[in-house]
Image (cartoon, rainbow, N blue to C red; front, side, top):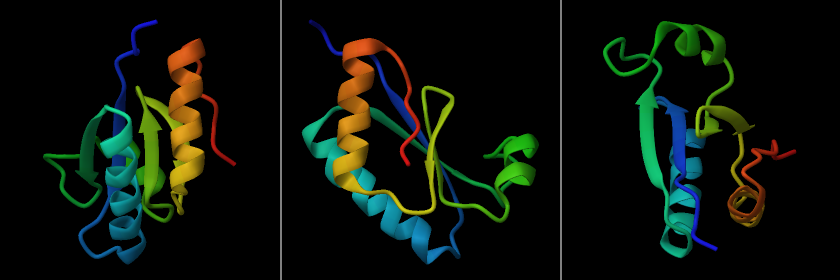
Length: 97
């Protein structure tokens, strides 16, 4: 079965150390499983839609998979990898707990 197209969106901020850690974890998983990564700074109006900037201002980092909420705060590589594999198999985005 061919892999489904996947885009991960990381809502982040340049002043957020947890966001840096989350991005590092995402990039490690990306080496094993291909997907497109989009990083949006919630403090940059031209980058991030206002609805998400307002919604996530106190919750970054937040990760969406194909425009659906996946996880927030800490990104665990094993759980992200498992979620991506499940999406490949089913097409369903299952939130990481």
